Amino acid sequence: MRSRFLNLRSKAIAWLTAGFGSFAALATAFALGAFEAADKPELPQITAGQSIDAGKWLIKPLKAWVTDQKIFSVTPKEGQKAVVFAVELMNRTTQSDSGYANTFHPLGKLQAITEQPLAYLDRDGSSLPDLQPGMPEKITYVWVVPSDAVPTGSIELGIEAWKFKLRNNLTGTPGWWSKAPAGTVSLPLSEEG
Image (cartoon, rainbow, N blue to C red; front, side):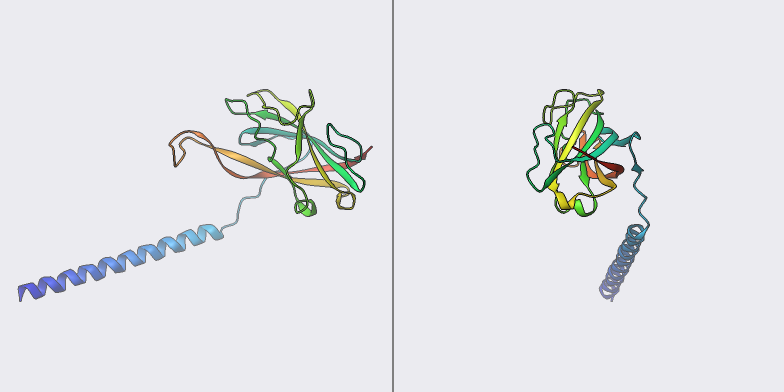
């Protein structure tokens, strides 16, 4: 009789534990779903002359224009134009870095037809040089696009940022990880050339 009572007792404990565990799992899933459905915060939108902290980079957009003339080492072919974006970047890390090439990407109809831009240091025209920490540099980004795809009036660019983590999940070392959208920049687009 005693063994039967212990058997019933252990079954009841097992059923209660499974019930509470299931309830906890459902409550957690509901809470995570509620947080996922919450409104996402608006990304900041900046214009020429305003600065934004984008992880590794402090960004200050200067101007944007379209040309069919040679810009640095890029010469648009017949039926193409260069969309050019001038920006001031400052490396906020402790080491020289050239990982700024894909910090900006066109939004709207240009997003689907552009590739990674060519980036040039205004000071000497070098392509993708390492930027020294704490030293602002003017960089020019160039996208070559079909002439009929060039936006009129203004251009909007997305800004991607790397976030600093004190400890990487795999190695336990500090570093810049987790690339995410940091904001957008909207600039008037002038015609030159």
